[in-house]
Amino acid sequence: MAKRSGVLELAVLGLLHESPMHGYELRKRLSSQLGAFRALSYGSLYPCLKDLVRQGLITESADPGAGGTRRSKIVYQLTADGKEHFQQLLAESGPASWDDESFGVRFAFFGRTDADTRMRILVGRRGRLEERLDNLRGSFARTRERLDDYTTALQNHGLDSVEREVRWLNELIDDEANRKQTTSPSSSEALGLGDTTKE
Amino acid sequence: MAKRSGVLELAVLGLLHESPMHGYELRKRLSSQLGAFRALSYGSLYPCLKDLVRQGLITESADPGAGGTRRSKIVYQLTADGKEHFQQLLAESGPASWDDESFGVRFAFFGRTDADTRMRILVGRRGRLEERLDNLRGSFARTRERLDDYTTALQNHGLDSVEREVRWLNELIDDEANRKQTTSPSSSEALGLGDTTKE
DNA sequence: GCAACGATGTATCGCGGCGATACATCGTTG
DNA sequence: CAACGATGTATCGCCGCGATACATCGTTGC
Image (cartoon, rainbow over all chains, first blue to last red; front, side, top):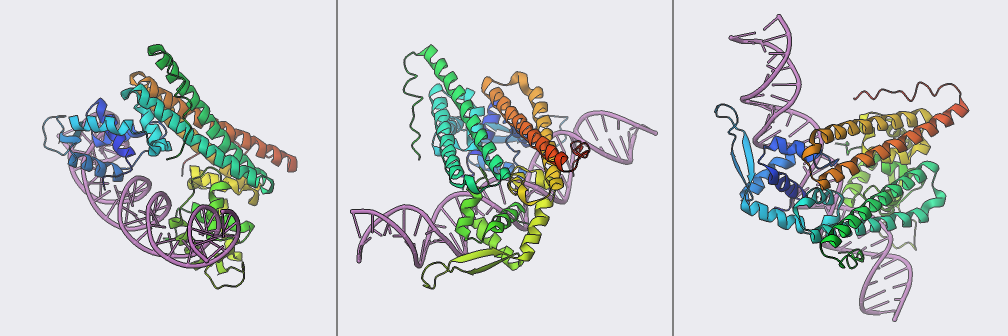
């Protein structure tokens, strides 16, 4: 228990970091702010919120909104423990954080973490993608002759997409390196060369 | 029951269309041939196979492989009913077939269906993507000023990806139109203009 | 005023797929 | 012939999705 894949937890904590919110609002922002990531359902959200309250990472309080008609609207707010836990989760740069969804959410909150963590996650993510690229190219070469045009087109398109993703990562990594160089020179060399060893 | 989201069923039937196979082999091809789509687990595959057998769409038989040591290796084979059902599933061009996964699998088997079905699925898929584009652009415009650089970069990247996908779809649609025109002229006009009305 | 309606808002349930795991046999290597 | 990794079938628990129910707010129109 309390596993919940982590990513949902991270996203909720991160959004609540900006301002207290209703569950409803939380859900909307999850799909709009965090990009094209599919909106998660209430079936996941509310149990997660309940869990976070139980852990003392967020608190729920009545809505001070309208006139004072007692009705059940709940505003969730981050606690000090919650902020701490958020930082801790965000900085985790293990293999799990290279996953598509996990990376997307972490990247959206990059502004709240330090340069080293950003670089670690970026490089790790690139490694994960290059791994995928290898697999793709491998099975592509292995099956290319006996596939029809459509299957081939699909494979090529998939390959292109991942390659494009890698290029995007490279730009981001360069940006980070430059930013770092401005602050503390002669340290960009060691970072870009992480050798992508798996877990 | 028997719903199983359809896409798994379709993929298994399609792969079995080429040649009889073991479950193990089936699983490997699911991730290599059908592109970058995540490998589905045995936890889904075997129950699905069992279900297809129960429906009489495939049959299971002992492996004629090695020497004759009785051991449990099972080769699955498509039946006549299975072939028919596959065609029927493949040709379904309802809203469900515009989904990412569903479209990918159907596209991989495009060679086994007719030009009209191909065009219907292609145009529908493009409509779905343009719908997504609208949502993205909407929430983008609505939130752009109060977001930091990273969140903005993420949104832009997401937008680019979907736009790129639409461009790919357009190329495919053009190709299909040309192909059709070669065979039977003056019929390409009516097809490209499907107005993407939802379900 | 108030009826009607869509957006806002909280909550639960069933079910399907995923990941882990167990177990068995094949083929190769030293 | 022992050891090991690839091949192969099978199941189980758990998580998250989609559907759904229900209540209230704010607006519109008469």
